[in-house]
Length: 455
Image 1 (cartoon, rainbow, N blue to C red):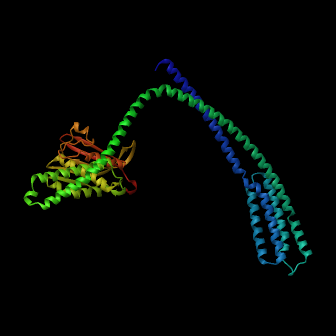
Image 2 (cartoon, rainbow, N blue to C red):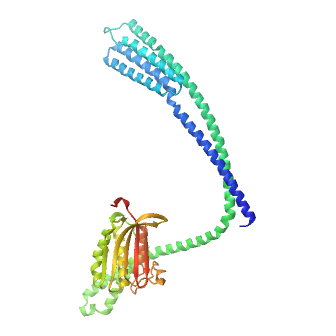
């Protein structure tokens, strides 16, 4: 790095550090004030400023209920009065506990005393004498209720005045805090803009220019991949269209063989045509599966079940060519997979292993719990291995092992391993291998493990 550029970088780092420290200080100061404001909000609740109104309404309701009792003589009115009286008494006691200032607590103490006096005096009015009241008697009862509740109304007025003062002070302090927030936020925004512009200038001069060439190359690669993808989709459509006439040709050949004499139907040319049709069908089927793979239907299964089913399916055919298929089912490994697709992968790997051995050898199926890196993260995994005693894979073949349509078999399609690798990838795993010439090959199906079913 040249000297002037080095000093510019150093100065830029110092400036950014100072700006970051200043922003951090502003942030810490802001949060301190926010927490203080939150504490103030917790101490000063909005509903407190309606307590005096609630008290007035409750007292008037008690007076109205007791007056209605004297007017109509209904026992329900007296019961309602007593229940509401108890409820209001509890409300006053609770508000006294919640009071945030000594002045408020003193007011609620006075309210308790005034309310006790009110209950004592109105208790004398809870007995109704006679069945009909003259208007003068009703006026006297109404006047007594007004006199008994006057002290409560006076106390509620004092409470309203005190709480209004507290609320006004709270609003003033909150406004001051919000004004300071606004100033701090403006300062932070200005600093962030300055830092952002500085970073953009430095990054553009030091990094964008070299990356432009790489971007051009990447765009060319993406364009090629898009063309290949389009070509693959077209080829898949063509393969699908080829399969239909192949099926018709195969059916016609089968009908023709049935209608011809045995000597003609077993003709070598007819058998060659039938074999080539089957080979074309297999190629088309493999190509379609590679080009348009189906989504896996995931279920939780023990790996030993998959291995046991593959072992039961292939054990007898392999014994005919003196290949022993071994099953190691000691480890308890649970996987979330599509059983049919994973069995297809294992069958393909076992068949490849058998072709590598030829005659007189052994293939081992095994499952184990381990930890491995998948997608850049180290995860608990289940590893299904297919181990053979074959000839191994030559280095020149390893380079193209997973390339579509690359095969070393005369009748192969070159899609078996690519399809297997794609199936495993769609399960969130990887298909790996380890090989040594004349000592055999081990293929490993590495899949995320299901922890919930481990025991």
